[in-house]
Image (cartoon, rainbow over all chains, first blue to last red; front, top):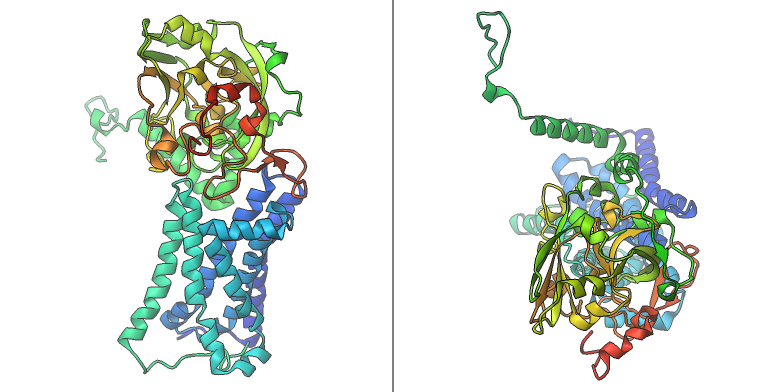
Length: 213
Length: 325
């Protein structure tokens, strides 16, 4: 039998995942305030970037996991995980703008335009903004079919994020992590292509309009 | 294993069944680590064991301060200078060297001197340390990644050694080779760089009195994670030019293929002089974060040409430093 949590269980599960997703932020804030990291800017930049990527993968894993397990209720957790992805991406960007450039916007733009790895990272972040902004129930209703179209942008954002990570690590020839997470994103995207090709129209899409959390 | 009784009634395994000591101990260490990482998480485990492994007994190294070659800027704490290192032979994370370098054996240690010299030889570490009086010099250290430290090193000018081995007229470059031993250096398994790590200088750079053959820091013998037992310090160049744990010094006619320059010549020049006007392709070199100076809200420092060591400028007169970066 397919596991189906009661509304009470679902609420508890959601609260647990909320706290878990917040823990990396609390840990980074706590350690930085305590003066533990030798180079706090590097620590926050890498930490927030890593977690944005992990949560992006978790967001992308919801649909494949739902289809594999039949746990349709998983989709009701997706918005929260997606918003946490944006939260860490925002923290990543703010660390760059604030502690690396001290709000010197001109210097930031110079960096964004001059260095390809920052250009693609910046683009991925900018593309995330409308997705976060349209995550409310009201926006979902208002946008209707266009909501799903807009949120397909995630399929561009994920490869851009991997490219950003890859080019950043290329500076030190250290590709181990980009290969691992690039493969994860690759599998999560390819599985969608596979489904699309193998069963073109029979699959009923679950949209947030039909399953609201 | 089958249990057999020999005529005396004592159980004896066949010699071939006895696990060698190293394997047995290695297995135990491995299992302990796996168990520990499963329970506490690997980072906590590393934090708990790092201190015990990395520090060991402190060995004092008396030296006279050379004020002419020392800055009076605030020194980086010993803790930061020994726990935030790039030493890829022990892993790519900056906490890795402090956690892993305890496996490096620094005695016995010899340095081979070869190539275009009249007196090629193998010098034992004890002799090397006594070759010239030890000085303490407080140098700025600027990493190519954009951070900096101020460290009191112990050593003597590399020129003292070079004069004793008498380079031939053909010697135009000097090459330093670091140890690359998988059994002592876990990072050598990775393919991040070509091993062994090789660095090099032009002869006039190597002969400059600022170039320090270094055997200690903070008044003691070099900790393993900082390039023990002998390394080079070239304070006007990015840190990666200062080869660690040196086992060979070679005098050459031609410019050697060096580690970072060899794999990414567009990003890491052979000279790699600290220069705020020449950006690394991936980041600006105009400013730097001084480690231990304030926190998040402390503005970065302006990076100085030649890391503030203007006395080396004459080595590069007539050279386009943007081309020869």
